[in-house]
Length: 373
Image (cartoon, rainbow, N blue to C red; front, side, top):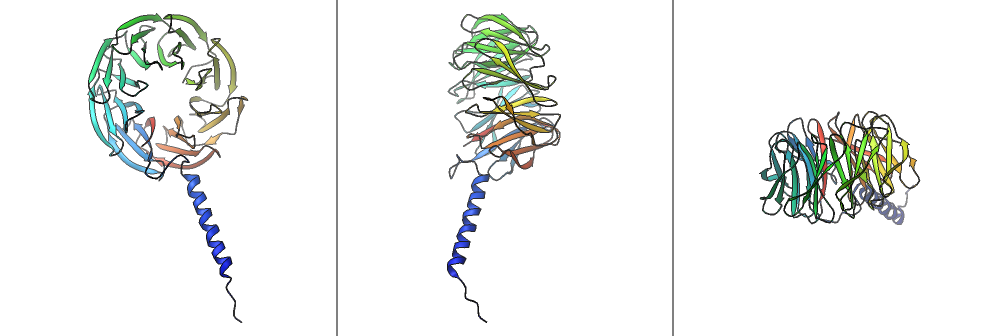
């Protein structure tokens, strides 16, 4: 007996399989990417002084670049195809060309730098050198240091205000904040704050700065219009990170020893809600629409999604052994999480809260930057 082949059915099945394969490919590819665009994560490895460049479309390591001992402060340049970072032991800023994965420049900045920040237009980079008590401003196009100033003892972080008028610096050994003119780095004010100040966030309207203590369960609120301390707010735990809501209305503070998330109303300067999250929440990333905050728990090995508007905690996402720093890709398609224990990068599909894969990095990964070019 001969069987007749139903060619229409065969063609239909082939089309369905092709469409299904296309949908799977699109699901694994960030929705905002167009042909010719690249999406990479850059991970600083403190164990060997390298940066691992990870292709987030192909989901594989693309290159390992030697940048110097103690890589820290890794940031994606806002307008140039570059990744900037610091060698804390070498005392210089380095510039990585994202297109070639090669070091384009090394710029001396002073002893023991730990963090850098860019001006809103990306024309300048600012670095605090804690070992030499100085702040430097770098022209990003020429790589030249164009301004230099003294700060207090052991300046920790320099942050630029969103209006590009001020540079705010935490002086850890003085328990003060220095306010400098962004153009000239001329000193404008020195303000007493919490003991051992470290991290800084500045509201979008540049009116206030919030500063964490490295030794106390406190944060300071600083009025940048009047250059005065407004309040020192007592917290129920260590302020491990500061994540500002995009509109500036709330400040989210993961606290490892409080085992949860502290929420500060930035208008009233009051600690409001607290959400219990897990064992040791210490870092977080927020979506552009401020609907979801992803908090990494370094002791529990997972990331906890939090629905901000309704204050609801969702089911944790297992991502590795000791997840720490995390970031969302543009469009909030993918959550990238550094695992400091297993030396891996966890890639999570944000919409489904599903782990896609784990990608190996170098030893002791810490800082993370994401770049589209």
